[in-house]
Image (cartoon, rainbow, N blue to C red):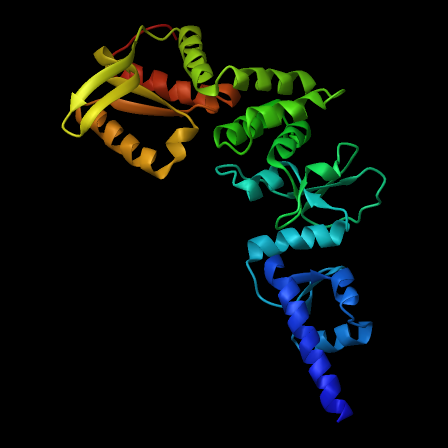
Length: 313
């Protein structure tokens, strides 16, 4: 009778652990296990039986889950009970697209003695604020906070601007939320850059793209163009951003709204009509005008020269 009761207790405990692991992509921490009554010899027995697998010093895999999510939970468990996703990793969890990172970024409070983990960049920072942590799902900094931190921790100023502008264009935070976080920066070598980015966002990133494009065209010495050219076509009426009709070249500046599926379909029709007219269509992401415009302008200039322009080198 005692053995039956013990077996039932183990089964009930496994169900509780499985329930705890389900929203964590099948992984739990040793702290969670011990808190649910698992003893060290219970853990060894489950691992020997092949039901559980150790995954680092602090993490146990008790079920199969999404591996991309599981590795994020493992990073937090391995580093510290206070660790949260931050920087570009928190932005990716919030929905940031088109941006990749070669490591997981987590933040912990200053002097919290975090552990190190392969593939994880640990930021021990005084900017850690518990009030900024999103605890719905995997613990992470809210997007506006994460965007500022990503910019501060970026390898280059170009990368810093990319993180902020891409997040803003994909509407991960409001301008007001970002402004609150920018004001918290007191001393940092990128303080001026981030404040400038905020000012540009406040002025309208789409309008900024148009102004930047015209300025860069002048700087490259490109020939005069027609802006906002309207054309009636069999597929609809389209307005093209910048057109060099004489050279058969059209440039389209795409902001964040062009990432929406419906807009992408409209863009395809619009650009196909230009190509049917014999134009080369150069598409330039709005954010590229701020972080790395030169490769796109090299393509634009090559298209103009192929169309017969022989202007300044």
